[in-house]
Length: 220
Image (cartoon, rainbow, N blue to C red):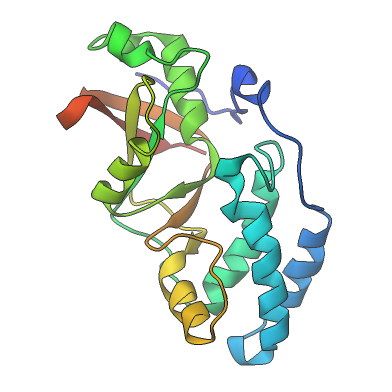
């Protein structure tokens, strides 16, 4: 299968249901400049607390349709990258996984068409849109599987898999530090933030318990 290299947008039917930002995204530039080039000892605890409070509202509440919407989410990337540098997070892992449900506009696309799903360009576009952009991933397949099952729904369960991705933010050292100084976290344990710029589907298979395993590559 040949791939055309292009900047992929979020699926238009997904954007139709995107929410409006509930935080001031202009604040991100100030946060980025506060963190840029600094080491941890250079950042006052109060400042780090303010950053954490903002990111909890901007990132942690996304599943409740609050924070930064899909259209603007990539603007978090520079801030997350600085935090990853400051807390010496991993920059790459061998494999990462993302567990989701299909979007409501075609909730059973895979169960309806498998094993021929990969041949359908509309289904590939649907899946690629769910992998695209600044999103939550993990290097634990079992945790990603829990994410896919999180809500009781008849929508198809999807487990994305990608090899050797670059990491924007690794939660491990960051969350250890926040607990140490009694600050709330704004990212789940074992969560990795990836920025998938141009996902392409390599393979679609069916795993246990009716979960569809979708292997992707980022050609961005």
